[in-house]
Image 1 (cartoon, rainbow, N blue to C red):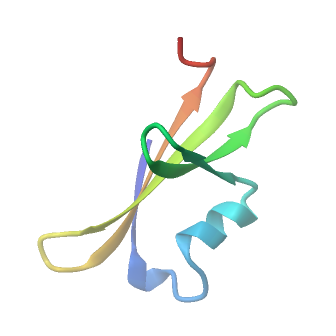
Image 2 (spheres, rainbow, N blue to C red; image 1 turned 90 degrees about the vertical axis):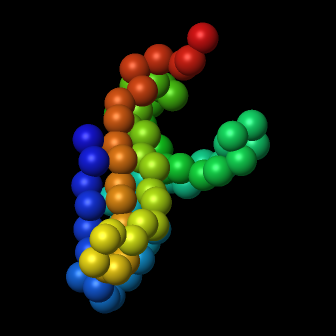
Amino acid sequence: MKLIVNKNRLTNFSADEFLRRAGFAYIYDNLKEHGSYIKRLSREHYPRLHVYVMDKRDKEGRDLIVIEMHLDQKKAS
């Protein structure tokens, strides 16, 4: 699932703060050299929601925040 938000609409807080308030934890992947957010759905590590956040600019020059979310059902093999 992809959510695109105009950055000007988030005046009170950032995407990082929004995700942390929603219960997501920040993780950094040393192999891929970038970070993302996860939220466990049980006490186990999997299944979990996995979120990537990117800053983009559209054709009209508006600053956007793109949030891509997917479900990790098990550890990658």
